[in-house]
Image 1 (cartoon, rainbow, N blue to C red):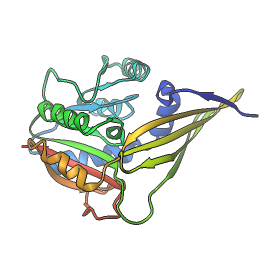
Image 2: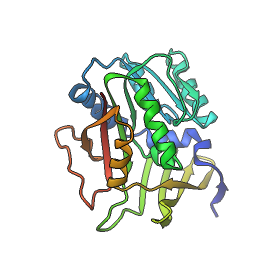
Image 3: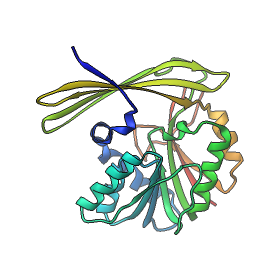
Image 4: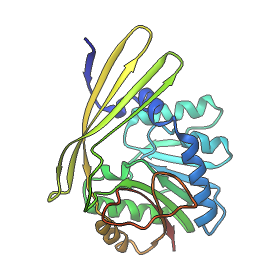
Length: 260
């Protein structure tokens, strides 16, 4: 019988990083294409709010970018900084709130691509986040923001699964919707990690709250932060040559916001 551990998924950065760090090449290529296509300035300095384990940050550092990030989870931040030190860099992440931060130096681009934005519990927190980003970006810099919208028509993706392996360690991750309250704009989401090593197998199970966003609600949010303009919109196919038009069935979106 598989041992089950009830715990916060983000408190297990080794397993989280294995699953969500496996597709970094496509994300890095897309982000660099966004820098080239949409930033109105050279992109040298980067920032990632809610950076987690730094799965993309370390790749950018190895490409010569100056990069920093913040995250609320101290274990994820420690994991990120340890990997930076192993690769010969100084610590790049600090414990901090993505809705209340200020950078010492303005950045040329920022990114947050895998739904962390939906952890923000209210419209006020989301607006505060975007204002912090706007204050942190140099003029002409961009913010690449990815999330799942709540579609107004058609089926909604209610479950996803990923798997990854490194040496003798393999992890299968599942995410599913437990409940959706459209009136309160709240979705309860469960996530599990099935972890397999040569000597042990176990399951970590967690539940978390996501705020829901329709396309109209995002549009209204952007209107409250006029320092940022929507330069383009993509989906999770990461194809810089194929921007999308948002419709009532759209769910996966990546907004490219530019600092005016």
